[in-house]
Image 1 (cartoon, one colour):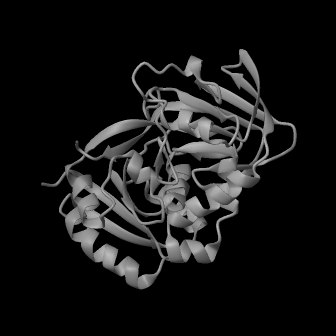
Image 2 (cartoon, helix red, strand yellow; image 1 turned 90 degrees about the vertical axis):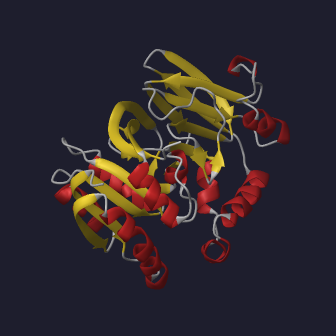
Image 3 (cartoon, helix red, strand yellow; image 1 turned 60 degrees about the vertical axis):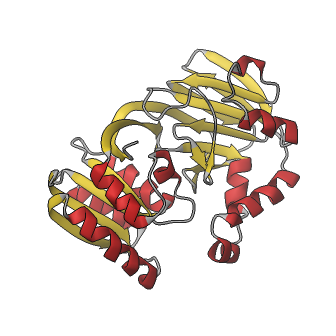
Length: 300
């Protein structure tokens, strides 16, 4: 059954050709039944991807993206700028695929393509960084950034997502707390020490689910999280945040607030990780754009 008149299918041309051809041969026959006119576009670079999103985004009803979190992040940064934004569907094509996990998508490419055909379209919030673009999943400093910077490229090629956990363990052992000045909704100011500060819209980092009960991708709020240290008790608190009867007011090793706007300042300039991409520096001045994009969720 055809749902859309026009669509584009974008994929990263720099990815391994054999593996990519296999994914295309599986996904395209499924998705093409859903769109009367589906144009397949191979992109040559992140800048080329952004140009294609801006060039075709307002002319089509749906954009399908095959790629990892970096590819999706670049696409979102282009599509979020458009006045008339298309529906966005994401196929897992990278190492962690946190975007697709957030949308409930299967990690098998054929099952994911079918899920995009059968799925439901729903609005999602987008984080907007002043002078720094957009993010769909998270903005982070400290441990999360150091983990990404410390990943061995050879290990990533050999072990995939396991390389993220290897780097995380090494980084935790060497992590030092930083001082964060956090301004919530231009009113409340908090001074916190921690090994990591996160502003979250999505629920996954490095394939790991972050169990914050208030965390929803379309609630018009961002969740601000500071992990105060890297010891075992703090991380036990983090993974048990969604237990019945748990209140974030009772947490000892974690600071948590919700915000429509948040500013995070550090004593020294630090690298920032946005959706797994590191190209910004602190401070971060961030606000939520409620229901800014429409994306396809797996139909539960």
